[in-house]
Length: 395
Image 1 (cartoon, rainbow, N blue to C red):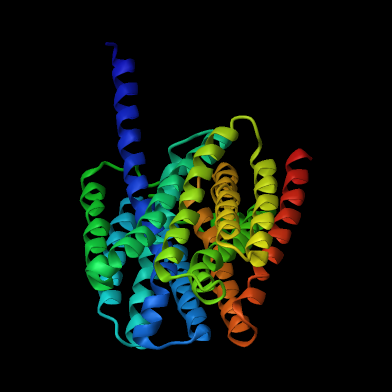
Image 2 (image 1 turned 180 degrees about the horizontal axis):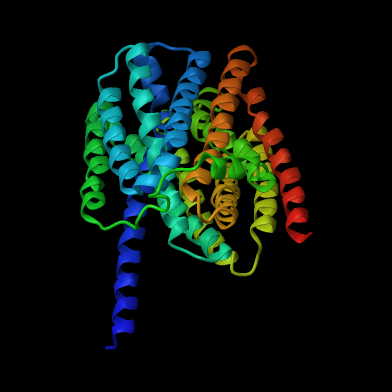
């Protein structure tokens, strides 16, 4: 074998291992995103908090994610991608442990603070790593959709375990088992050789300002603002909607929530293939229309079978929106991908803070069915923004 072929082979092996590391980190972030939605009906009975305080939990978690990602963007560009992955796994593991021991709303708030900080580090670190491993825009978008499959797997895993094992093991033991699953990948992150930091000479704020002032980056950020809100709303309130409004048993609601995350996972596998033929903009527009249909169906559903179809349709529709948008952003900001993703996630998580909190406030006064109209408004805004982005790209 020639020297050039040997080098190429080594780079391929390294790329595969780094991709595996990113997949592990994203699986843990999937657990983070599904956690509150999976356990809220049980934890609310134990710690006695209302719907408005539920919105407060999402507000705090997303605020901590926002701070974490803003800080880690420049740090990733300067010090590399190992740091957020190792720190993120340890913080999430700690959060799961403390949630298992939380018997008051104040204790739960502390655990959610750790959960948000760790989740933000993992989300930012894994997405930047995968984006930097691929050169072409369509390759980035397809790779980020594939990364999202592992997000879906992690998010599906937890509600499935809770629904099937809570009667025999109890919530605390399930959470402690999840701690072990969460912390284990830290060993892999410590052993692998990561790419050199892009800006070892020092972080230049003038370059970051250029990223922030880029109109395309801001437009993409607002797409993520509305979609992040949607994902936290549907992932967080679905089990409460199913047990409260639809009067389904908790176990059935858990399985349906697992089905929602599974449909996101399947959708991202399909979308990673579709991006070979479709542009990211067209795919996101089609996905938004499908999501609107699913939410309308959920709000009008009076039977379990219609509810199942609606939830699966929502998940499949949501699948491509976030990773495809990140893929476009990654191709626009190659040299400062960590900073660009940090800014994008900060905008996204602002939506993830405000919009679920607003749903909690509306639901507390007028019911959850009315409050879930908010995702329909969000999807309308995403469609309008995609039209603007598509036209800008063609100019």
